[in-house]
Amino acid sequence: MTVRVLIIGGYGNFGCFISRILAREGNIQLILAGRNIVSG
Image (cartoon, rainbow, N blue to C red; front, side, top):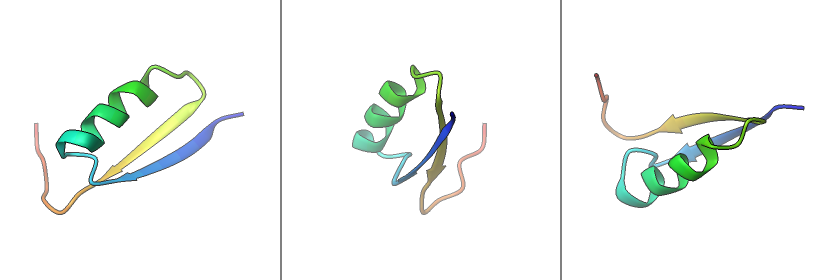
C-alpha cells in the first residue's frame, strides 16, 4: 500500500533533509510544497 506524505516547507533545509530520507522508502509518495516556485 502506498502512503502519500505532504511536506510543507519541502524546499527548505529541514524539509529537504526529511524529504531525502523519506524518498528512500519504496511505499511513500512524496508531495512537496513551498512558498516559492522552484524550477529545474
